[in-house]
Image (cartoon, rainbow, N blue to C red; front, top):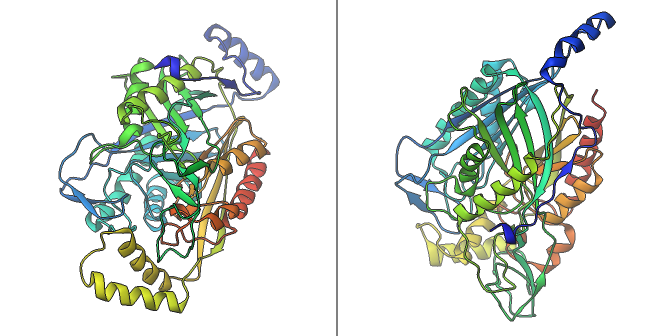
Amino acid sequence: MQDHLTRRAFLGTTATAAVAPWATTRLEAAEAVAGEPKKSFRAGAFAIDITPRELPVIVNGGVAERTADQVVDPLHARCLVLDDGATQLAIVAVDSCLIPRVLLDDAKQQAASATGMAAERMLISATHTHSAPSVIACLGSDCDERYAAWLPGRIAEGIRLAQENLAPARVGWAVGEDRKNVFCRRFRMKPSTALTNPFSGTRDDLAQMNPGYENANAIEPLGPVDPAVTVLSIQSPAGRPIALLANYSTHYAGSPALSADYFGVFCKRMAQRLGAEGSDPPFMAMLTNGTSGDANCCDFRHARRPFDYLSVAEDVSLAAWEACKQIDYHDWTPLGMQERRLTLAVRKPVAKEVARAKQYLATEVQQRKPRTWTEVYARETVLLSQMAPTRELKLQAIRIGGLGIAAMPCEVYGVTGLRIRRGSPLKPTLNISLANGCEGYLPPPEQFPLGGYTTWRARSSCLEVEAEPKIAAAVLDLLEQVAGTT
């Protein structure tokens, strides 16, 4: 596996060597003479189990609805709380495909009441496993209302317990790389060969997602991918691992339900690699979803290679572990966090399209749930016509010393993530998708004329054509603001 894995580590430019234990007293004495109290950095972590207590449950992430009545591996909301003495914030990764903003706002308000932490200082994202209970209606799947009502309280409790675990800590970051498991899944196709959808809002598509391996009609991938495996490592002053936050930009790898997919296996492997299994309090790793809107593990230009969610976790955890070896830790570093709300237009069907969709549904689908692409998108056309003409998004940026974090509630393309990373004043910067809501795919404007699944008009892809540059500009502005935090 290692022969196929390319890795590099990039160090933060502000990194300094950790103060040796024998020098601590001398440092504190010098600060006391200067009349400046020693700054304190604290961290607390907790992984709370969110596996449903009652089965079966609805599972979304596919064109048609399915259910699961067994648990392959447990699901968690992995919660990290950081405190630099002036700012306290929480970062949470939830094993779920998509989580609506209303549910996350509920979880944040419950957590704020329990902890005293401001709701706007909480970032909560979905890992995007396609093997978890559905908490939002999407394409052919409905929401599992029983599970969705239970989940916010569990997330809030996880944040409370992470805060309860706050203890002195040191922090560092680095970037590794895994090119083995991230490829653009969206291809330019020869004319008249791409899949079409009569209720998609597109015509004469020239793009197709997942065209199949070695498809002679697939001309080229339509975008770059981000192979970075960015890690934020938290240790006790003595060097005991407390938590690790990592970020990678490929889609789910594919696991039977219910499962956290490769995201969950990654967390177990990192505990093993760092020798942190069985620690007290328990070590917690989390893997957040990067800019994977047009990326997955499949290199369709060649014959299919063997992989599964276990092998992907092995590769990504190895890249993260190698990056960890390069980290220089800080005994204290400043935190900063900013949130902004952005209102965007919704792409809606015209009356003629809605009438045609209603007629089709009445004739072909009637009262049953939709099963095919055509049936699903006919229903989506009707549902979109009933939605408000605009949608409000929450965007966030975080600074942890020299590390930047951009948070967007969309499935973001690789090209967008790379542009944000290049433009950010914080080096490195990682992008967390599906954070603080799920507002659908975010194709750059130039992708819309090509059509294809991620541009097809639906609740899962409905933002205005110019949404991507507006979101990217707003996030870069937020990063500039937090970069000034002292």
